[in-house]
Amino acid sequence: MTTYTGLNGQAVPGTPENSAETTLDEQQIDYYDSDTGTLSTKQDWMKEFASGDRWKKYTEIREQVQQIYKINITILMQLFGHSD
Image (cartoon, rainbow, N blue to C red):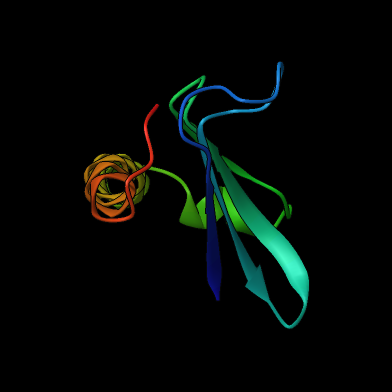
């Protein structure tokens, strides 16, 4: 399961605007941080999986989700009359 977390702007110093983590059997296996733009492994066995084009594609997917989230949050804020 992948869990995405997003904030509108950098509301909490030191906290990324968007982050995502994937868990498998209740163990975190990766983590994406929008501040660094990197997807990192959290389990040793993931390092082999994380090599090459496949990992690059997973990183790109996280970046795309980040952009979609920003658009959706902006739309929701407008719908509910909230400002930045």
